[in-house]
Length: 418
Image (cartoon, rainbow, N blue to C red; front, top):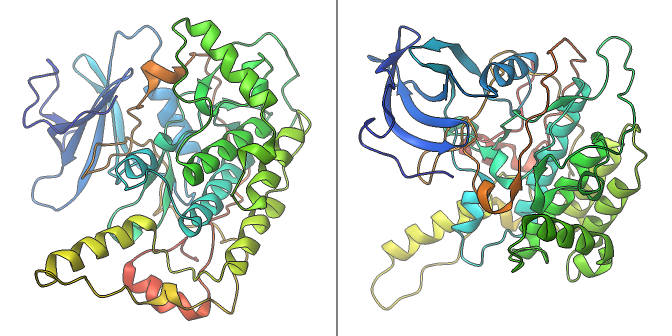
């Protein structure tokens, strides 16, 4: 579970003050079952990083495996960069990009605890693109949840980053693309709230399961909750069984009541995919992009929380007894141009890496899972080796011509062209 930043490092004995010969270790900004995350800086510069520590004597170490995977994904949009990895004293250490809040942190701090349609569609497009990129590099994630998607910082604040590949698994051979065999004797891996039905049933996970989990996450954003949250069942096994039964029996139409039908179509498509089938990512993105245009939205990368901050500032500046002036800007003008095709690969500037989620205020690039204790069954499977794969990249929605200047001034973009 994430914790608030600490002013010292006394809470975690043995944490070195400098790692990698140049990264100064500062306040603790997160923690989880893996270890702790501290903020790191390079003296004499304004560079800030997340420094992830894992005990060197841990029974099932994951940090090195995670580092290899992020480097395997080098160059992908929304993949944080690993700056350094090694052993310092009694710890395995990884230094990576510092990111902003996770989608879970943002949503639970919002009034109403849910996202609007425009924000959800912009996030959906990027999440699909991240999955396509990961899958094209021969791996599946297996732990899709809002905690594992973080927003970028500063000029990259509009980009959604995917983190925490500790449970990722190779699903096909990099050279032959031979798919792993179908099995029905697997334990549940991932976060129960968003796990696919097949994962509940012990069926080997594949690309379809990542997509089904994304479907549940998107409904969570739109609804503010899922029907199987908060079940009062003390027995862990019985609780997981009850959640699975609810996922199997509640009709998609009921789940998506008062929500645009595209969300139901997405979930239906994911559930009906054969085990080893390649998803039609273009079709899935098109579902939401068409909805985006139909709803008259402009792709300016203004999210709900961006508007919340603007409204808060207007309220602070408004004279006593007066309401703030209504918001104006690109969002009020529908985009005539539509949303263009996917972006091309980025240079290595976006990098590869692990990511750590920090508490409110500052983000990190490594995962410090929230809700693991109450809602998570995180297995630790045998870790496959990391090998080369496809270099295809899908960056996400591209701004229409009418919104380019607005997006540029906000420093938010879906990806750079080489």
